[in-house]
Structures are given as C-alpha cells and as structure tokens.
Image (cartoon, helix red, strand yellow):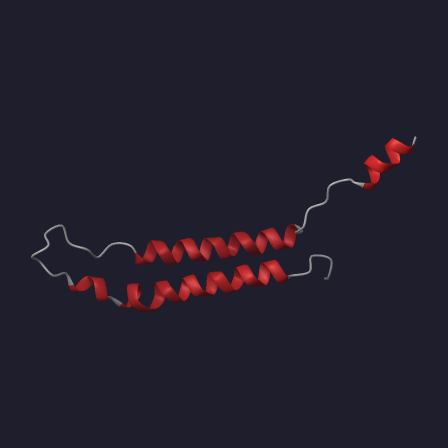
Length: 84
C-alpha cells in the first residue's frame, strides 16, 4: 500500500501548461518567419553587387519579427497557466 501512495505522489507533471506551449509555438513561428524573410539577396558572382541585400524587408522587418518572437517566448515562459 505504501508504495502505491508514493507512486501517486510522485506522478510527473509538466512545467508548462497548454497556454504556455501555444504561445511558445507562436513565438517560434515569428522567429522562423523573420529568419526566412532575412534570407536571400546575395549574388552568385562575387564581382556583381546586388543592392537587394539592403531592402527594407531584410534590414527592418525581419529583425523586428525576430525580436518580437523572442519577446513572445519570454512571455510564454513567464505566463502562469493556472491564471485566467
């Protein structure tokens, strides 16, 4: 009998709740989208300069999305899943 009580008492619980994981996946999606938007703009020929590397999307939008994604990740970690 004592062993059964100990097994019930040490039942594994998750650190984060469903809300936390939902916000973590949203943040991860934001970070991934930011890195996807940053990609490209290079040139196969090293003698040719491609000014597309300095586009608004790669310089402003993509890094902003990555930082927002990291902020969402911090929020997801600190979120109390029991509170409504």
